Image (tube, rainbow, N blue to C red; front, side, top):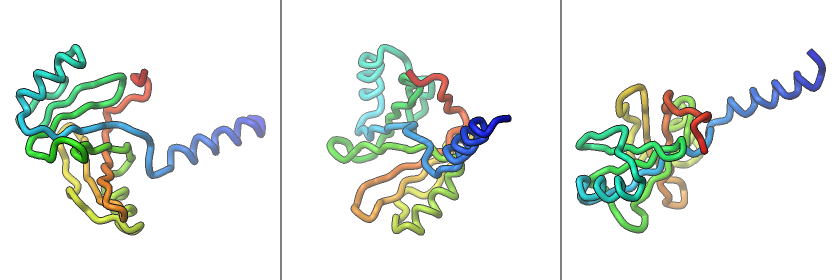
Length: 139
């Protein structure tokens, strides 16, 4: 293996070891899940792939658009979730950097774990560990 290939391998290794992997999920909080689901079915021209009373999820271009009832809707009612390899480790590191836990780490099924923290500026910052995310599906 030539020197160029080793440098490339180190660059890939550095990339995969970063805490934040990239955008994965945007969740809209809605007051009425059934109405929101009907509207988003029309907007996205598809049915959700995950449909439960506590969460409705759509795959959109390799990313996820989620609907969650009982949250704050309107401005400030959206949470962006950033992909991480280990959600527990990410929350611990974010806390060490000054964030406070908003929604503690929870397993939402199928090996997917999520949490939100509040950054030092008052913004909600979500992390998601999703073993099903596929970069190959990104459009």
